[in-house]
Structure formats: structure tokens, C-alpha cells
Length: 146
Image 1 (tube, rainbow, N blue to C red):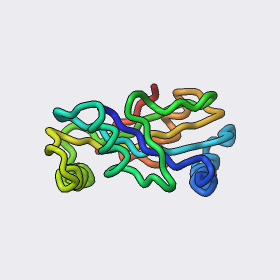
Image 2 (cartoon, rainbow, N blue to C red):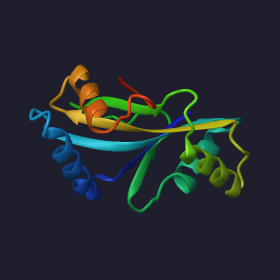
Image 3 (cartoon, one colour):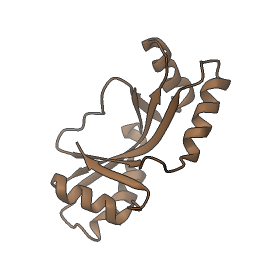
């Protein structure tokens, strides 16, 4: 199950400014940018448990929202995911496994973590290129557009 955690709109302006500043230096056509945290959770969980884990363990209900059914929908944005490649140690995923278990849920079979970027004003090819150039290390990250 893919869980996406993102900052609520009313708190996301600074995040957006930071992303635009970094990316627009190379891609001046960028109009807007948003970011999300991704958790790919594998385990034997009921739908209700996934929503509890998403809301109680993986996100802060005051400033964040989550999507556990499908990717976040932002009209007019190109969505790009950045995940660790197979075989790369994902230290955050180890912490997430422990947090889920400490919260009283069964230990996940596996957890992968990553980020999703939403870029307005760039096509899929340029959006992937922008994320690779500004955030990814191609030795350890896999970057792909939806």
C-alpha cells in the first residue's frame, strides 16, 4: 500500500517557495511546486489499520494530511516520484517499521520510503530531469514520472 503524506495547503507556502527557488534556477518555466513523503508499506493490514497507521504514526494531524488509497490529486501538476533503488539501505524505513510496531500494529513485511514532487509548468521529461538534477543521487535513487 502506498501512503502519501503532505503538508496542508494553509501551511505549505514556505515549502513551495523553497522548492521553486531551488528548481526554477534551472527551469524558469516552473510555476508551482509541492512535495510529499511516500511510504510503501507491505504487510497484512486491514484497510482501517492502514488509515490508522497513516494518521497516527506517519503524519502529524495538525499540519499534514495523507492519502492511502491513491496518489494525491493536484490538477495541472506533473507528479514525479523519487525512491531508493533496490538494494540501497533505507534507514528511515527501519525507523518506520519500529514506529508501526511500537504503536501496536503488526510489524510490516517491508517499508520503502521516498518523495513525490508535483511540478506545474514542466512536462514529464523536464520534471524528471529537474528532480534528478536538484534532489536525486542517481547511484541510489530511481526517479520516474506518473
